[in-house]
Image 1 (cartoon, rainbow, N blue to C red):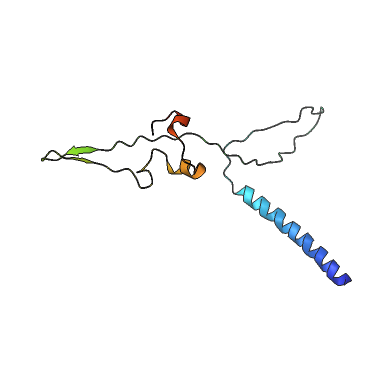
Image 2 (image 1 turned 30 degrees about the horizontal axis):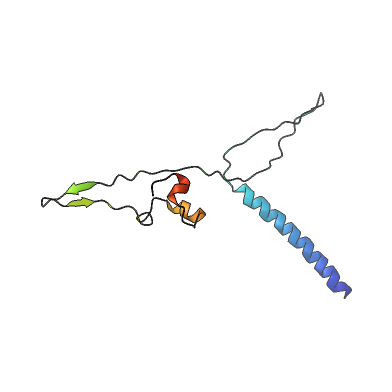
Length: 116
């Protein structure tokens, strides 16, 4: 019984060590978009700079990305028009694929002041 308890404690310690290594590896591969240097408020005189302690903070920025698809139109000799087609997934609405991912519920046009 006592051996089992010791074995369980040892396994917990190993798991904790593995988690720390995995977390470091994940943040080490992230692309860094901005770097900001923050100095301490009160630095005593004659203090020596010893480097930085890096803290990586992940965030998401959502910005608009509107695309105007200019569909080429041609008139055939018999008077009919042939028009280019929108890409797959955009053909039936005015919303891009990312908007429909984030907002799966149909949005009424009066809500967004949009002509849908």
